[in-house]
Length: 175
Image (cartoon, rainbow, N blue to C red):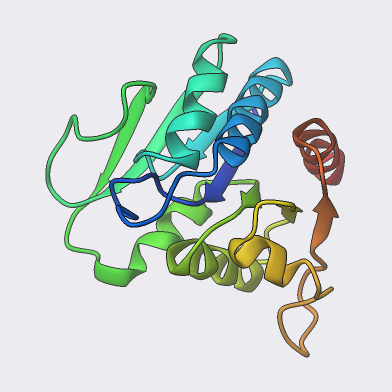
């Protein structure tokens, strides 16, 4: 039996935003997302760095989940300590988001800067279900004001305010 592969997209950690304070509430929510995804039997897909990516992997690992990271570059063992499987994408430039999103059955996003926006646009174009976990700012909250990303209305964004509901909605969309 196949396990659902759910991507979690969101803000990187302080290593990429050294001039801002991390939103611990957002990272706690991401850790809860990881926990809930693991308990639902899902594989967690992320970018493998810090911030939301590390928090979701930490939550999944603490609850027996499997974590996979898509990493750009040529080096192995550069992901956070909670990643089980690294998928290395060499020489991809800005095509990376399509690889990460392509591995997913659906994505959940919270917070997020330009990289998250890029991944969400790819998910929309690939018509992957998108669940926006709001309340943490960034592109996720901005996009929550829209039903669709553009006039083609390829997929409708689902909006939630709790990690538990985000996982429940995501799994239900795929059944």
